[in-house]
Length: 248
Image 1 (tube, helix red, strand yellow):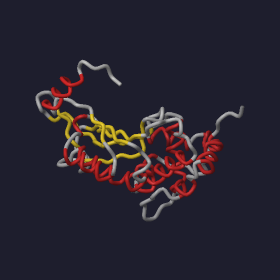
Image 2 (cartoon, rainbow, N blue to C red; image 1 turned 90 degrees about the horizontal axis):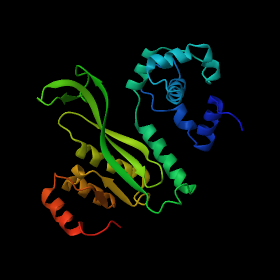
Image 3 (spheres, rainbow, N blue to C red; image 1 turned 45 degrees about the horizontal axis):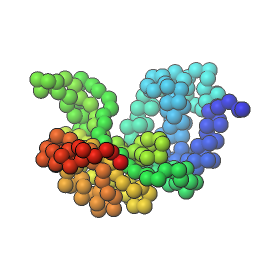
């Protein structure tokens, strides 16, 4: 059996997954780039696989003797990665991920799955003491004191296939909410994947609001929502109705 190498990974991504065009043009927003976008993106992907997640760690990789084994011809610093990612358009990545899912379905990767669905939920990333951008949302303690800031997103994943496959996020900042972000996310996924790709959308009970349910209905997808205390009357009615029945 051949051992995995960065070059074999590159061949798999470009030939099997057909991501060569995306890797060459990932949505670089730099005005006068000196370092190819492909090299920067590939270095970050290799860093993720090697569990070298920080920009400082990626810089150490590309400036070490291991660089020639990573299919990288240039070296750069962490500031170049920061400048690149700050100006990177997410639309090409979203389109590439959606294309991989459609290709997987065409190749019958999900044929053993009776129901394919989408799971939508809120998540967060990063933490800092001071607000750094318009998307930073305050983190409060039990006394409602602001103890830091972080970014919040609504995440969507393909489920029901044996694997959870996250493929898109929608950020939301102060004055916004995960429910409105979820509506925007559903509309974009409906456009990228099509209505017939999945059979249902599963959400937490807090998403069971009229605007979100209407957005899912407009996309043509029924919603499975977990009942929680935010809908007390409906929760009590459901418990009374189904408490004596075994699950199906």
